[in-house]
Image 1 (cartoon, helix red, strand yellow):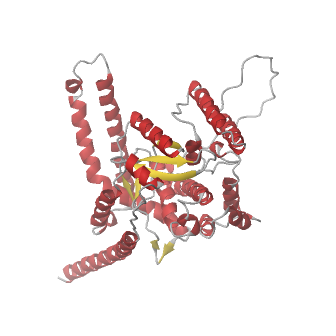
Image 2 (cartoon, one colour; image 1 turned 30 degrees about the vertical axis):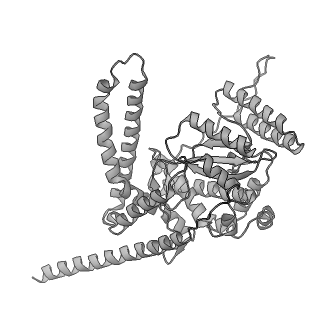
Image 3 (cartoon, one colour; image 1 turned 60 degrees about the vertical axis):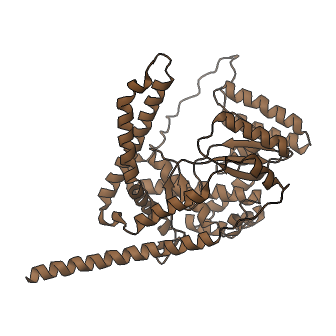
Length: 441
């Protein structure tokens, strides 16, 4: 009898402890969600403003964030009121995540096989030929959907464990909590000035658009507003919860989750608050997010999935240089070198006021990239304004040209005591001069 009472008492204590843990985990998130929702503002644009013109041009094409946020918030809150991962061992959680990612990979392979049957001109009855594959696909889809919330929760906690070590926790809780949702991602419309590579606007577009719709949107915007436009897919979006694509790559998922969390962390800092209206702040923000994603992603893999770590690059044995024979063959095409040259020459032409010449030059260079196997659909000011913001490559990104912002951010990381120290310093800056001052040894 005493043993039964002790076991019952122990079970009750465990239940009380688990409920308390759940309350501590959920309550801050519910409060944060309410705060974020109260910050939403809606403005009415003037009838002839750029925003109003874009609204008319993009009728029916913009992404419905309101419905997405409601659905995602309910899914997250419903799961986090129960927190089933608390009853799993660390080993069970790792097995669960790996099995989930395998299912996603199998699903994507089945999708490709089904698509191949429907595009094969020799296949006269693709519906019959693909029936078994479609049944497998639908079964996998149901299994993935049933496991999605738990898989997300486990990976969220794994990334948060590293963020906690970097000092981003308040009372044990990462602030803001790292939350993401696997979802079809919107496309993004990037708008740049023509006389200068500078993003002036961005609109998120609905999923499922086709390439011909991309082209129509870009040309309509460019004609109406005299700008440079690009519609492009994205790898993640810093909503809340953040939006991640469904992928079988665990490394990509962990890194992108960390990247988008960085934007949420910096949201109320000067560099985050001016993301939309200051190109310098935008490059600082994106470059910081890339640096953090790489470091956090590697550390999560080291701790939880060491078998997935990239193999170290082999050091080639030193050999005496062989005598070279004269050849008329051109050097192999280098995307990075060619893109860096393209960006720098485009900047020069635009600085001289030669807009038409710059645009003709970029189109010539696009043909060169396509010829060498790089299928660039568009290469214009908007392309560089978007991709050039991610300036975390040593020596600067090829699409960033001679932009000094990325190298300055990298120098600040090098001279910071830790990753957390680096990001907290970034949260105090807004200008390039701010970064350079803090980066000085």
